[in-house]
Length: 168
Picture 1 (tube, rainbow, N blue to C red):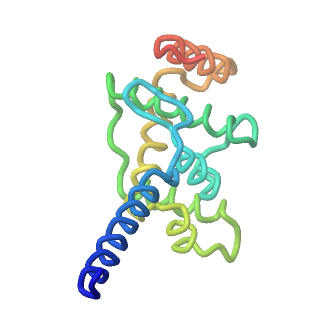
Picture 2 (picture 1 turned 180 degrees about the vertical axis):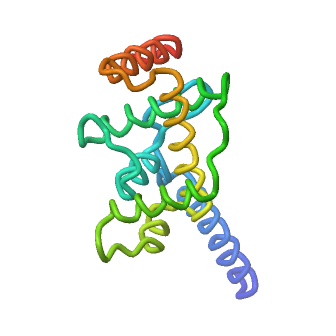
């Protein structure tokens, strides 16, 4: 085979090999996130659990991944129900106060911006979460008052929301 022919053949072989390697690399996928639960048209992901845990956004019944999944599901179901009879929007001052409470819960010396970055949440996302917390508080106060059986009543309501959504 002449030199020119060999050069072309080697070039074609390298192109074929690089194409095969690219195809193999495409078939080896690294999961970016995992779905842990489906809530209606919404999902709870590994990232959601990591974010809630890292930023101390929830107080789950059990400090486990499943505890966080359950707390996230309950929150989403309650927020969905809240849309049927939405309470008044919290003021900017109320959201600011909730943000200060949240920051204090993180502990002295916590680098809030670093935590938000690591959790993949923006300042606006955090404020939206805190806004929803305040909206839920008002909704629960309006719906269940301050009676001594409030925790049991809320638990029964959330159980009904889970049943309606087909969640254990």
